[in-house]
Image 1 (tube, rainbow, N blue to C red):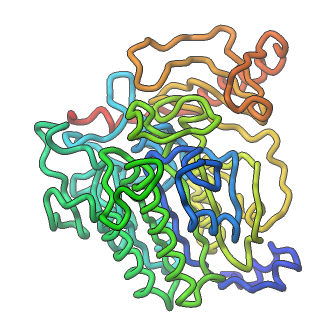
Image 2 (cartoon, rainbow, N blue to C red):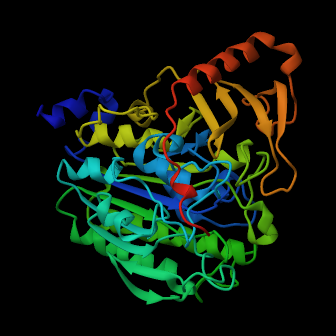
Amino acid sequence: MKNNKLWLASLFWVPVLAQAQPQDKPNIIIIFADDLGYGDLSCYAHPTIYTPNLDQMAHEGMRFTQFYNAACVCTPSRAGLLTGRLPIRSGMAGSESSGNVIYPGSTGGLPLSEITIAEALKDVDYQTAIIGKWHLGHLPQYLPLNQGFDYFFGIPYSNDMAPPLYKNAPELPLFENENVIESGPDQHLLTKRYTEKAINFIEKNSDQPFFLYYASNFPHTPLFASNDFSGKSKRGLYGDVVEELDWSVGEVLKTVKKLGLSEKTLVIFTSDNGPWLLRGENGGSAGLLRDGKGSTCEGGFRVPAIAWWPGTIKSDQTSADIISTMDLFPTIVKLAAASLPEDRIIDGKDISPVLFGEKIEMDNKVVFYYFKNEIYAIRKGPWKAHFITKPSYSKIPPEVHTPPLLYNIEHDPSEKYDVSENYPDIIKDIIDLKEKHEAGITLVESQLDKGGR
């Protein structure tokens, strides 16, 4: 293996090198909120939710304004993050006859043939853990310890997937590794318990490279906050929950700093999809973006995101580059000097130059907005074409658009002004792109069709 330190150093500008030399294999922490909207943090202009730790994280690092998920709902979004691949490639997107996600009665899961970030990092001697929500299969063969993780503490699916909403489901199971250690845990205490477990993992592995995937169950409904945060936010219970999550992020960063690991640790905070607007005041805000979770409008796919790595990522940076959670897989693999699998398509791209402050050509980056196994929209550079539209969680049937609706997303992030009549050449280019992409997709068995709710 080549000298990793020299390899990493060659990627940096001289001013960055003057700040600090990153270690050969940086620690990686991904903090993944659940249903947090683009407009739900004070550093993304929410007027009454107070998130000082995330604001400080953004001040010390890089805030992204065009950061996307692989899907607009939980299960496929998480599959895309961990594999770097569009969920349709692994059978995790769903189908016309399936639900959107894995349910307590489901018997499918992320195929073991897929390679997760954790598995790629295990090959180069990382310690790996997931704290929080898994939602990629709850049968024994699909649990995290069979997907590259050394440790699991959390819940196998969403925090509402229990009685009374799911009458035939068991009480919500809390796992430690492969064992259910509690049924129906007190969700008021989940964020505190997750925080404690995350800190313990960091402290235990402070002398070796580690990967921590901290996937909170919140602010997905039902909402729960501990006594320390309940009733404290001007935004009500939803704000209480987000502010406790902000506290949790602060405790993780405080631990990293206390242990002297700041310049050795890349921390990324983001959300799995947009806000669940159907929940009213118990749901979040997409800010200026249209619609939310369950929609292929911007509010469903575009989310807040912050990257922090003192000494490597300069402070007070804002990136308007088009970035996807799928980009994290190849980026992390490169930073860790691990190997990308060569026997499959990886849809994500290495974005480490963006983190290092370098300018790279991303003007024509493409975003595919899948709903289940069908493309509803495509973005290419500033242009977004909607082939099919449907309001999220609505009984209104999907509407097919021929020609597709067209928006300049950089001018019109709220998707208010259809300019399709003015740009027939742009529409033709995106239609050709869609046909080429679909011709290269090999459909596999849908894991979301297995079992019931």
